[in-house]
Image (cartoon, rainbow, N blue to C red; front, top):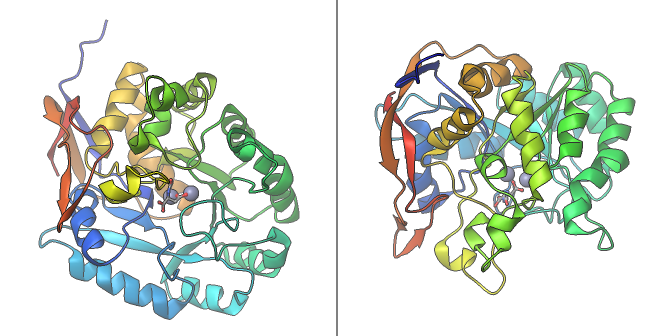
Length: 349
Ligand SMILES: NC(=O)N[C@@H](CC(=O)O)C(=O)O
Ligand SMILES: [Zn+2]
Ligand SMILES: [Zn+2]
């Protein structure tokens, strides 16, 4: 029998899917990520969205200006795809190292996606170009038709959009973002080196019962919505197996407390504080700590074709409690797992 570890030393992790927002929200949420993570793929769904190289450079500058002294963090910017985006703009941004990837939001699928793509065929010229230059496509994979039940939208997306796109562009690198279903897990597993996926802490720790039984818990509401337990189990199984095209993407998506606890609450979990502790908890529950480092720090950069981070961090078996709220001016944000205590604390970074 192996002794229970007291310290987990891993190569510095990256977060391959995050929303950092802007203005005072940006300066409040950024330090939780930048103190631990080396890099993060920053989502472009601002208002207005990041759709040009100039927008991305300006946003990157705002992120760097908000970075606390001593944090060694690199934001990796993404371009928000619209029906009318010029392939030249995408290619120029990628060539200049401003855009690391481009993000496909089906129009009206999620927060700030109203400018998203109405029909994926409209962006085929962009995808053609991205395939050619080796630029990754990141996808929020849900169909948006009114007649498709919200719990079925991800699985339907695989047949209606994801698979046709992959057949049309077999060498386009695609990340199926924040997967939530066994169908998506199996689909990615059965794919090749051009297909990867991110998985969030909330989809590994919870299913829709946790959100809905005994009262609605708005702070667990995110998109794609939590599914039934068999899907949670499938996601847990896939990371426990050590499958190497699945990697850490928190989808940390802060909204103010008022906008979450509302008659029409926003989707998104603010999980940046204690994100790594949450993932470590899951890997330990699964007896899969041997795959923890790869999920956090190796699989992502390998998929993207980026170097691994050079330094290391440590988590120790020390209880750490999530605050109930994080102050944001005269408002607040309620973090994921508010008030709860986790067993693994990041102690050296
Ligand atoms: N995940 C969410 O529930 N919300 C994200 C958008 C997204 O990633 O779909 C947000 O920007 O708030
Ligand atoms: Zn999304
Ligand atoms: Zn997201």
